[in-house]
Length: 301
Image (tube, rainbow, N blue to C red):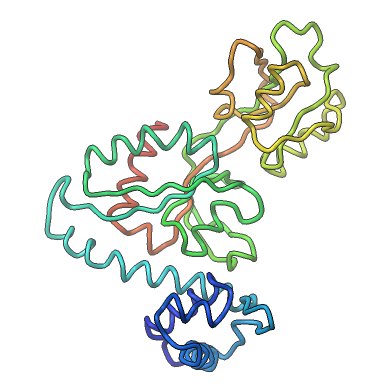
């Protein structure tokens, strides 16, 4: 198979992100015919249709999603190549620099990342973190990494230890490297002083994580079906404090608990979630990602 050149990869990414050949041409400063010709050439080289063309624009096919994700990741390596080479000849804080793109779910971005980033930027002032909060729905933060939009993600993990994780189909089902940073128990949270919190309605939110947790919930005859859903865990916690119900929340979410709520442990058989980092094999070897992983592990040691 003929290799795709960097300019061809940039065209694929631009078409996917702008939703059409004309918009991609404007972004790249090319003509529409040049963009169309480049995409057709790329499709011929890889032997697959990468975009569905229509009156409203162009959208990636499953093969196109995979190609665009890999294209972003390859282009990212071009971006960091200079910093990596320069860093190889230096020592200490000056060895690492450049933009570091991080995706994290809300409570991790609020409580887990800041102290790690504080130490990271103190040790390596040349690193410029860019953090985006991503909801843990669908492909979640792992999907952002697989699609090349983040160098490292903080995600909820199903497995244990360090190994390969599978991102969702929309992210290209790419093998990622993961490492567990912390295991945290869920607890029952209910209005402070309530005499029988198990009689309250259950509050929930869409990101409340993991098939294991859901299986545990279904096995408990005292937990009713959720009657109220909220946008995120912070909203659930606020609603519980207002006396609107009870909820089952993980430890990171409970760091925002106030005196308006009481927290009760669920015992040794209660559900536990694993929070960890997700990155690509190529990003895992870069100086900035390695430095961030060290700080995250130090934070959770």
